[in-house]
Length: 72
Image 1 (cartoon, rainbow, N blue to C red):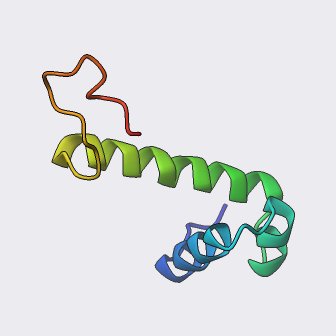
Image 2: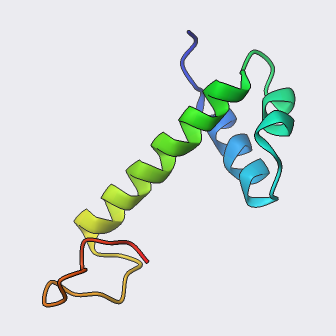
């Protein structure tokens, strides 16, 4: 399986932001299947949540809140 290029990741995120379906995203990214697109988006979202948790960005919750680890 080919590694994702930064350009592909950027295009994938742009398409996702425009509410494209997984099928439409896969068609726009030659060589990528629907399952590959879905999996990559999940990983990117998870990485973003972990990054947000580690850096404390993007969340109004603090460590005093029992839900500070959730990214709302």
